[in-house]
Every structure is written in structure tokens, then in C-alpha cells.
Length: 360
Image 1 (cartoon, rainbow, N blue to C red):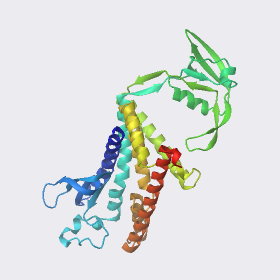
Image 2: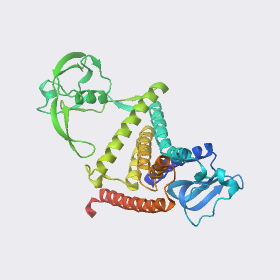
Image 3: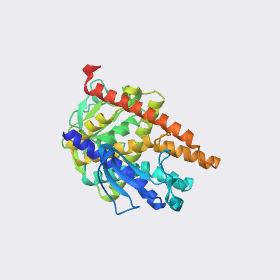
Image 4: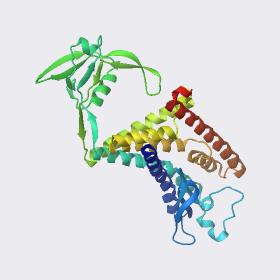
């Protein structure tokens, strides 16, 4: 039940953020928003300020949401927009106004990911200290005399305060010998270590070459609360890293460099939401930022029915000077919806296999 609660909270916030982007840009361009719904399906509750104003709605299925604008639907059953209200209709706006209204949804996912990360760094994050927790035999560190409990304080006279910095410096060494400043108890000494190259499995299940000296982190952590300026810098840096990682992962899935069984669905998101919430507010904010960037990137894919598909049609319209015919757009949207349903079914299957491996 706790897992389900946090899944609904996380997805509800991120969907609200996405739809808020569409809503605010629509209002900015003077487009009338008929419905702002958190959730899909039957209406549970709603309120508005009167006829012609936006209805803010809570719907039965929490894993979704939408903004319905005047003149947005291509459904033949929808009544035509009265001539006196055409200037408030989405489809009456210029192509670039429509482009930015649609683009605002994914853009808000990125903006709020940055906001979540800034908040996490200000609340405080557990930074792993560069204290050696394990030493692998027959590796450069062991041969150089590094022991469990040693603290690496500098590499080539550059201070090292976090394990992340230590690890990144070793991996980016290209195998050249480096001078490590090591603290052991009250003593400090210098030792020269040349990283060795090893084949390892990366985040995407691929075999890659990396440089290692054969040490692992210990349990030493420090809770750090960063001031706003530093939290902003670190949040922006982390947003870029997450974006780069997700784009790389999506591309590898598309090119089949990574097997499709790596695709996760709502059950995996729910499980991770519960686990990160149990680890504290900062961990939950990091997870929300990651999922928000995921939503932003996936919505920008040029798949009909997604925001990226609409943006693709708008770019074609801007290039050729006239809209893509409604019939083509409707057919493409149906194909896109079919593809998304198949992807969702596949992701659910992967989730179930991960949760119940004996059922394979």
C-alpha cells in the first residue's frame, strides 16, 4: 500500500507539472482551456468559475492527465467552434504558437527536474567519502600497499573530498600513473599508482573498457546541505548528466544495442518510488527528477499522438506553408496509439518477469 501511495504521488506530481506547461502557454497565447484534468477516465470531482472558464477536474485513473483546449480535437464528432470564438481556438493560432504550447509540456518536465534536484541538494544529500572500504587482490591499489580504512585526500595534488571525484578521476586517467596522497590514521604518505584497464558491464548491459585501481567505497558518508548557488550549480550539472544518460539509453534501445527487456513500466516505477521514499526526501526528489526527465524525453520522440509527433507535424507545416491534412494526422495518431499500447504491454510484461522471475 505504501508503494502504491508513493507511485500515485510521484506520477501525479509529474503529470501535473507536464500539463501545467501546456496550460500556462495556452493561456499566454490566449487559447481557451476547457478542461485541466489530473487523471483520465470518469470525472470524480471538478470546479470552474462559470460558463466559458476552465474546468479543473479530478478523474478516476490517476496515472495520466490532460489539458483540453478549444479547437484542439480532430474528432469529427466534436461540434465546430463558433465563428465568434475562433480567436480563442488552438487550431486558429499560428504554427509557432501551437508549437510552443505543445513543447511547453516536456519543457516543464526538465524545468521541474532541475527544481527537484536543487531542492534535494539544499535539503541535504549523503556524500560518500573517499575512504577505502574494499581492496581487490592482484590489482594496482593492493600492489601499491593501499589498505582498507585509508582515505585518499588528493590525486596529483588536486584535493579529493568525495568518492565520486576519486572514481571519476581514475576512470578518466587513460591509464597514466598518478600520485595519490593517502591518510592512514594520523600519518599521510604519497604513493604512485597506475590504473589497470578492465572490461566491465555498464548501466546498459554493454561490455566497456574502463580504468580501475581495485578499490571500493566504505560506509563513511557525510550529510551535506548546499547553499542555493551551489545547489543550483550541482542541480544543473546533475540534470544534464541524467538527460545525457537517458538519451543514450533511448538511442541504444532504438538501435537495439540494448535488449528490449530493459524497458520498465509502471510497476517498476511504483516499486522504485516506494523504495526511494523510504530512503528519505532527498532520494525521492532525485527519483522524481529522473522520472520527470524520462517523461520529457519520451514525450519529445516524434511518435504520433505524443507531443513530439505533434511538434513534427508543426515543423512540416512551417516548412511547407500549410498544415498536414487531417486524415493523415488522424491515421498517424491511431498508429502511434497502437505502438504506445504495445510498448506499455511489453513494459508490463518486463515488470512482471522482474518481480516474478519464476514465471518466465
